[in-house]
Image (tube, rainbow, N blue to C red; front, side, top):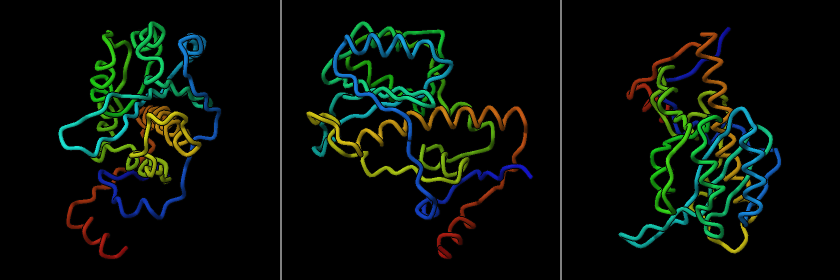
Length: 216
């Protein structure tokens, strides 16, 4: 029997799912010398997951500039602290590369944020939202997508933490790495399902979703 996926996934059901977290190696990059070595490694990988974090602003009308770029394979994630190294030549080399696919979610927003750090010409980027819809899925948040395709929960508790802190704590590092790594996992699963057709899409309409809410 193939995998069952849903066009819409009830957010309340996510709280009951087992938690998933990136279990590979996480490396924090705080200098351009370190960035060069990291980018050399990453550009020799077959597929990368990418995401950004920005310190939240709680003042109306004020928006902070992106401070973290996380780039992951299935086993290792580099956290580039842009508030320290900026959009250096090596970061640009990574972002402008046209040979290694870099998969993310809502990449248009990430690219806009990164452009506020400096100018670059985006290379080979793949937005999950442009492809997951082909499976019939309508809910496009990372948390809902992962719950839908893998039946596990990605915690978002660190999302509004201080990404410009002098030192990122372990929870922040795990959160940031998980988001980038999850993009790799989701894209590979999308490709598998698309090629094999080994899934069944169940349509959940709004009234049914409300019924599920009342039963949960």
